[in-house]
Length: 305
Ligand SMILES: Cc1cc2nc3c(=O)[nH]c(=O)nc-3n(C[C@H](O)[C@H](O)[C@H](O)COP(=O)(O)OP(=O)(O)OC[C@H]3O[C@@H](n4cnc5c(N)ncnc54)[C@H](O)[C@@H]3O)c2cc1C
Image (cartoon, rainbow, N blue to C red):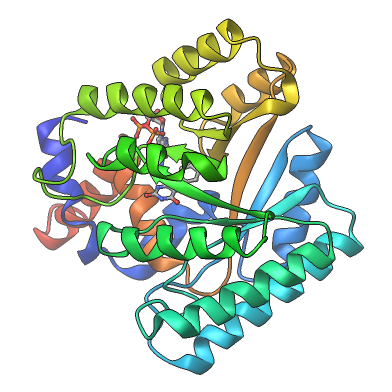
C-alpha cells in the first residue's frame, strides 16, 4: 500500500456508513441467516467448505451475549437442515468476555455443546491482544474438560505466538494461523511486513511439529506457496490441513487451489452488525481503501459532487 493510501485509509472511519456498506457488501453474506445459508450452499457447490460468523463484537449487555449464543444455535440447526459443509467461528467479546469471564465461558460452553450435538465444530476467533490470555485460558479449560470440537486462532503478528504454540502443544490444538488484523504496538508485535511473514512460517512449522491440524488463513501468495511447500515436504494428506480465506477476497485463486486438490474453507460473516468487520476489510484492501477515502476526501474538500 502506498504512503498516500495508508494515510487515506486512516480517514475511513469518517466515511458515511452507506458508502462503507456499498463498498463492503462483497465481504458479508447478508443481514440474515437465510442469506448466510444461501452463500454457504453456493460455496459448497463450488467445492469449498465454510465457517459462519455471527457478526457482533464488544457487546456490552448480558442479554445481547445470550442472543448471540442463541443465534449460533440457529446457525447449527440451519447447517444441519440444509446439510451444509460448514462449522462456525465465534468472537469471545460477542459472548461476553468484556463483561465477565464466567458469562463468556457459559455462553461458549453452550455453543460448543450444541455443536457437539450436531457433530460440528467451533473455532474461537482471536481478537486484539487484550483478549489473548483469556482466550487461550478458556480454550485450554474447555479442551481439558473434554470438549474436543473446539479450535482456536493464533496471530503471527504477535511476538508471543511461538511461545503460545509450544504452551498449547500438549493439547494438539486445531489452530487457524493468520497474520492478525489488529494493529498492536511494536513492543508486543512485529510491525514489519516481512517479519510477520517469517514468524508465520516459524509458527506453522512448530504447529506441524506438534501434530496440530492447521487452517492456513492467508491471501498472501508467497505465504500460500511456502505453506504448501511445507505440507508437501512433510507428506501431509489432504485431510491433515486446510487453507482458509475470507469471503470476497481472491475468489479466482480460491478456485485454483480447490482445483489443485486442496481443501479450502471460506469465512462467511453475516448479521446486522456489519460495520466494524467491514471497516477492517476495507482497510486491508490495498485498492479499495484508497479509492473510498479519496472519494470522501474529495467530497469534503468540494472537489467532486
Ligand atoms: C479465514 C480467515 C480468518 C481470519 N480470522 C482472524 C482472526 O480470528 N483474528 C485476526 O486477528 N485476524 C483474522 N484474519 C485476518 C488476518 O489476520 C489478516 O488480517 C488478513 O487475512 C490479511 O492478511 P493476509 O495474510 O491475507 O495478507 P495481506 O498481505 O494483508 O494480503 C495479501 C493479499 O491479499 C489480498 N487481500 C487481502 N485482504 C484483502 C481485502 N480485504 N480485500 C481485497 N484483497 C485483499 C491483497 O491482494 C493482498 O495484497 C483471518 C483471515 C482469514 C483468511
